[in-house]
Length: 404
Image (cartoon, rainbow, N blue to C red; front, side, top):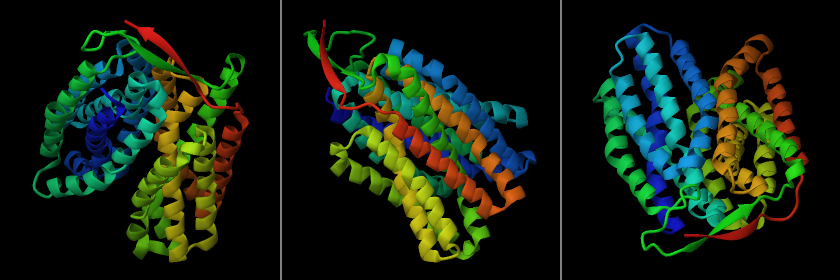
């Protein structure tokens, strides 16, 4: 089975996974809040708690993926996602709703980027960086497709039935695809023979960071990704109210709409021209776009052109960041133990992302938007310095090992 086929199959399941398990929530949350007599802030607070729990589970899931294979875990994850969505849909009170949301985010760690990136590494480590870029390009359309799709469904169905429909999509679309991938791929951990029972060489990737320098490099990488996630989550959640507060109320939705295309554009550009750059260089570029976007917004508000420039530069950053979060750990530390390592990265990202919107809200309430954004600009600059400090030179080497 070649990497291209796996990317196409995973592209479908990632669009469904992110669309149903994450992006749809913002459309359905107001109806959930009304039904249970909750404030919108409370229901989004429940999402933050569920993201936190999912983040804490991610390292354990990553180790499980390394031991049992990504295809197997994603197959189980599709069933878990269907059950979690169905349980949330049948919630009869606030407690069961929150438990359902937590179950959804735990299931997400089994089927979203961390698992799919690891499957591509286990399938073909030497081609995984390129495959991850292709996959993120496809999955980048999840919000573009599922925000309007969920809105259209919700116009005819209540949120309970929408979630039940989404559960059916995981059961009847994602589950068969992931099961097929499990059967067709031969993971490094299982050492299974391919379907023709012929031995073949598995190309493992050795990272560029020496063993003695890995703890420091990993800590710096985590710091950079944590800051990126904090800033990105802050802007995604606060985009519309922030633009409104800065004098762009009438154009806030139009400006925000530029984010998605810019995100896809950066992934397509990297897919076409980024082969000459190391993943460390891409990480520096992605993080450098964040302070640049923030400074543009601060310096130009309430200029409409400046706001569009902010949204585009922010989208470029987000598009590249989603790639390097999968490819940088592979380049630096190699394919051995990749699933567990990526699980730790995902854990830090989700934990920080769950706290970021609340922290920024506190800053804006007590300091105002200009000072809060100045703090964000300084913080995001620290991410650039963290990635620059990682060091390392050269490109990952490929080592061929034979399996029977």
